[in-house]
Image (tube, rainbow, N blue to C red; front, side):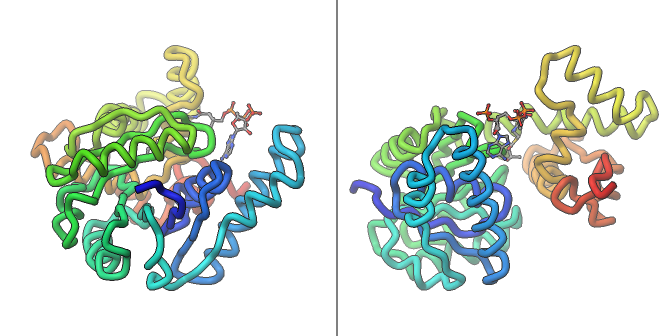
Length: 284
Ligand code: 3HC
């Protein structure tokens, strides 16, 4: 099956980027979140992002208009019935994702592929919530989606070769380089990244250095574009805590225990840049 229509469900930080690159790659895109207000916010973000590309003369104003015209918006899951590939990018909550995959399975046409952008949750478990487990796969993008070149394609134990091939080819059409990953908590990138970010948080928690110095040290000492605390705020502390908790539960290894400071900040509603406060204050 050739993918023409891509539906994206959940258009927060990651979903909005997936919608943008899918429309830029020429797919017909259906984007959906839980409210009209969220859709409007996402639409404004995409307009701003494409506007920057016009200013930099990377695309023309008519290219921008053509890309925007490729995107349809809805708040109703039933509208996903004719999509070829549906990419779920809702919040990192296993119960919510399991429920959604069960619903999508009933709505989507029988040959549609159901993909998840989860950062850590078992794709196998989501596949098992459907009557088409062989057509369920992980497509894990990186933030900011229009910039980051990687796509992890994650095979659930049930995923068939045809689905893997289509997801890989679609990822390449979206301009990404694909790595194939076995379904294991946090996959490759987050499996290696999260212990690093968590350790940086412990370094702050234990008073070894200030947030600014920890970030400065890692940026200059490791040549990273962002320091670990800055990156944590950028990705979202709520997401990072959810991923660490999945890893801790899955592997039962204390090396994945979340830093208490991270848990406290999430309890306080300090999720990083998206809420205006995390390891740094963005409201000032
Ligand atoms: N959307 C679109 N384009 C963006 C963007 C965005 N949100 N943010 C930056 N860009 C573009 C800029 O327009 C610019 O494009 P140009 O080179 O064509 O002019 C380019 O990216 C560089 O941006 P800036 O000059 O503004 O800033 P920087 O050079 O500081 O780069 C950055 C910004 C690309 C975000 C860089 O700091 C970076 O790579 N940070 C690390 C990001 C990272 O590690 N992401 C992975 C997180 S883990 C994850 O997502 C997994 C999840 O499951 C947790």
